[in-house]
Image (tube, rainbow, N blue to C red):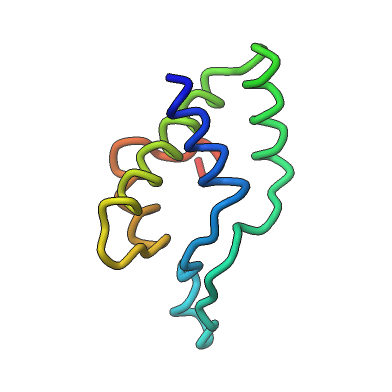
Length: 96
């Protein structure tokens, strides 16, 4: 479990990704960068660290684990494709 936690932290807060989720909207350009800061994800992470997490925090973690795994195994490394694939089994509670 500790390995998954480390990998999720790297995936969400440190790694750079092909940010192509909104590329289809108004010709938005695709960039390779870290995810934009998200205050709710930061709050989730703090709750997980403190042991005061909720069931939705655990769902978020499972979604991020799945998303990271899809990106790791995918030749395209597309965030959009990985997010959609992860959401089939582990929908993000931030989007419900």
